[in-house]
Each structure stands twice: as C-alpha cells, then as structure tokens.
Image (cartoon, rainbow, N blue to C red; front, side):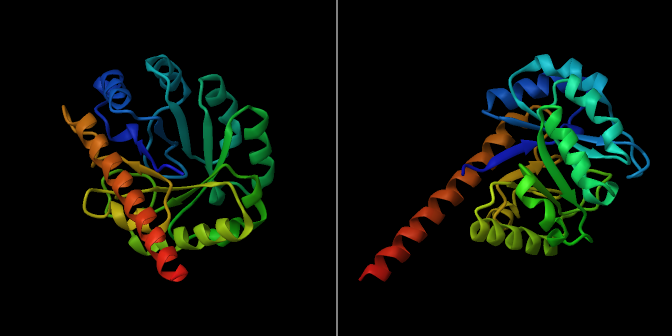
Length: 237
C-alpha cells in the first residue's frame, strides 16, 4: 500500500485555504484532513460543515473529517451533505460506537475511529472488521504544533500485526507531531496515512514540503522492499 500524506488544513492560513488546497493538488496530494473541533470534547473550536461545503469545489481530494466532538452523530448528516468522503469519530466520545459506525456507512462515507494517547487501541477489537481507518493520535487532540508522543507508536505496531494476522483492511492513520526528523519512525511502525500540519503548511512552501514527505515515504518503501528481497534471498541460500 502506498503511504498517503494527508495535509491537515487546520495548520494552513485560513485566508488562503483555496490557494493552499491548489498547492496540495499540484504536488500530487490525494487526501485533505479536516480537524473538526467543538470546544467541548476538546478545548478548541474550529469550523463546521458550511466552510467544508464551500471548499469542496476546490478540487478532487478525499475530504477526511476528523470529528473531535461530543455526539458526532448529530453532525454527521451535515458533513455528509457538505461532501465529506470519510468520517472519523473518537471512541471516547461514542458510548454507542457500533451505532455511529452504521450511521457513517449509511450516509455513504468511509468509517474511521480515533483513539487518544491514553486509550488502548485494542479496545477497538469488537469493531475493527467494520473500519476503513483507525486513527492513532500521537498528541492529545485539540491544538496543532504539539510534540509527538512517540510511545503511542506501539499502538501502530500492534495494529499492523493484527492486520497481518487477521487480514484486516482498515488503514492505519497517525496524527500529531510528524515532521522531517521523525517521519521514518512513523513509517517503520506501520503508518499508512500520515497527517501532517504545521510541518507542511508554510507560506509559499506547502507544495515543496508535501513533496518532501511524499519522497521520504517512497524512499522508505523502496528500502523496505529491498530489505525484504535481500532477506528472502539469504533464506533461499
């Protein structure tokens, strides 16, 4: 699976959202991460379905909405109508998680669940076969620009192994503190969709930064394939 680098729009200059999305498209971006915060589940407040619907016409990208909200089921129909392709809700905010996941599916969106750094990923075992994406937070949600909690990558490793063992198809996404210095740690753990915000959106350098992270992911994938081929060759000798 080719690694996806998903720019987090929250880190972009809101006065230039349209232009920044065009830079992402020009650099070959395919997924735009939308951080939806309600001021209750997390202390910050961002944007709702209205601006998302306006941005939908900017280009053909996956609109990936990360709902850091209480009662996300109240918001899901409006985000579906705004053109969101995939919706990720927090397990901590959903006492009736299976019901919410069915609702996302019925609204025609791909289904994701996020877990905070203090939430064990194995708590999702009952719903893993239903998911298109698992988002492992490597910072506490609510604000951009935080330093990554790299201990959370143990969850990525666990989920990667569970996927391999059981043939699960959910994509492993990580969000929080990814930068040029640590991206290979995320890749080595097994991240398949990497959300990057403040390290990517920089005035006049967004496209350049996205290409850097895409190239880093491609280089890691080539090294991994080469290493596996060398191992197989040694084993065959």
